[in-house]
Every structure is written in structure tokens, then in C-alpha cells.
Amino acid sequence: MPPPAPLFLSLASPPPPTALLPVHHHPRSPHALTLLAPPVASSRKSAAALPACPVASPRHSDYFDPRAPPPPRGDGGYGRAPNGAQDGRVFTSYSIYKGKAALSFDPRPPQFVPLDSGAYKVAKEGFVLLQFAPAVATRQYDWTRKQVFSLSVWEIGTLLTLGPTDSCEFFHDPFKGRSEEGKVRKVLKVEPTPDGNGRFFNLSVQNRLINVDESIYIPITKGEFAVIVSTFNYIIPHLMGWSTFTSSIKPEESRSYSRPQSTSEYEWRR
Image (tube, rainbow, N blue to C red; front, side, top):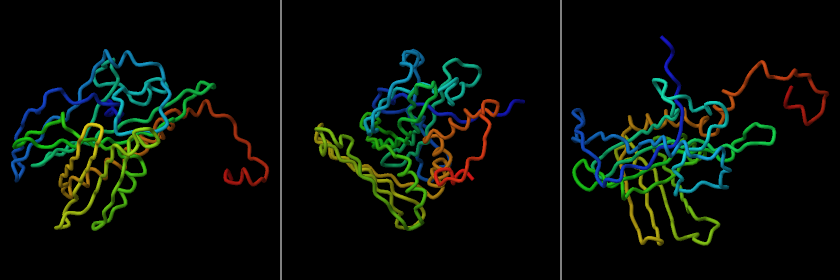
């Protein structure tokens, strides 16, 4: 039996246009909460129409482009879909559903640009997109009113270093450096619950462009946070493009190495 296919990344499509997602009861939940299918879908037609390798913008924002970046080589490190499907993209998400809100963690891969030599380099690191959807009824969530917050690699690292009683806060201005700077303010706070058995994820959004002032919070249990930590530890090399680099190493193409003379600039290679 062949080994299981490794995890590969690509971008997910936006949630379905319907305001409310279908409800499924979770039989083991003490609060009768629900597990809903994450709001992802794929479109082969739109994926096939992507350009060869667009140059990434200088910074990412919380208004993300749902288009998947092109592969840097071969299968692009994203692998092939199960059962020999030709699409080759895999969509993944980790979603948590509670009484007042739902929270989805969706990875976004790095973007690559071609070099004159025919190689590729990382132009923009990937990130993890947090999508908060408020509850509108019992076990029903309105994803059309979702608020998003993109966690960079260093912000993910900050979350990974939190102790049991530590908290952190991240501030984003998606339009920083542009004419709309200051019109959209996003603050994500992660702090321990009063009983010390979990975390609160609280996203506050002030958007003067569309007159929105909203705060969405969701409690995360100790077990759920453990899954988040484990997933973040795994995904960081993929977001940085290091996994693509290691998969591109070919011993037969390596040039012979000769030890340099003793100079300060080569000292690190000893």
C-alpha cells in the first residue's frame, strides 16, 4: 500500500453565498454545539485561468485575494489531489463552533516570483487567515458578516510562546501607507479564560469605510488550543516556503564543494 499523501496547501474559495450554513448536531458536545462543514469550495475553471506567476504585492492585507498562487515548479509543492484528480489543489481548514460565534483557521501559501536564472524565490510569506462569523440563532452562523484577520509568521510565533497566564494583542491597519490609512482598524486579543482552562480570541473591527464597529469573541478550550499550537508548529515552514525549498533539492544537481580559504566572509561555512 503506498504511503499517505503529504499535506499540501492552496487557497480556499470564499464561503457559499447563503447567509446561514446548514446545522449538524454534535452528539458528544456538552453544550449541544455543532460541527459545520467549513466554508470552502473549489472551482477548476477559475484555477485554470490563473496567470503563470504574478508578482506579489509588497504586503498582505486582511482584504485577501482568493486566487491561488501558481506553483513554482512541477507540482509546485502542493501535490496532487487524491484519486488522480487533475486539479491538484487541496483545501484545508480547522473550524471551531461555539454559542456566540464560529472561528475558522485557513492557511494561505507563500507567493513566488521567477528569477532570470529560471529559479524561483519567495516574494511574500504565507499566513493563516482567521475568519470570525457571528451566531444569528442556535447553532447557526452568518458567514456573510464574517470579519477576518491574517496572522503573519511572527504573530503565529508569538501565539506559540504564550504561557498559561500570558496574553497578547495584535493591531492591523490593512491600508497602512495608503490614502485610506486609519479608516480600518483591527485588534486581535488572545487572553486566558478566568478558569485558566482555555483562551479567548477576541477580534474588534472598526471600519469607517462601511460604517462597521463590531467585536466578536469566542472561547477556545485547552484541547482546541493544543490542536492550534500543533498545527501552527507544522505549518510555519510551509508558510515560509522552506518546505518547497527542501523538496527542490536534488543531490545529482549539486555542484562540488571546495573548502574556501580562511576569510571572514566564509567563516560561517566551516
